[in-house]
Image (cartoon, rainbow, N blue to C red; front, side, top):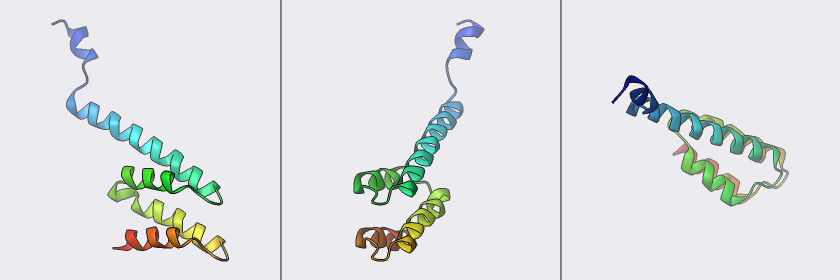
Length: 87
């Protein structure tokens, strides 16, 4: 195997970093969309929760809390999701 072939193969660490970067990018986009959508879909919130990492829980909680604060009669399902994050 030549040196250039070895350079083409990602090490397990680099591959993990790449996957994590993509995960973070997708999570950022979804959090932004949910933040801008008056009535975010349950499917999009489920996707966020599937991608959520422990160090991003606070970001998601802030998006949910902003939604709850902005609405005079907030969605029960948003409140339940916020409560689940607290536990």
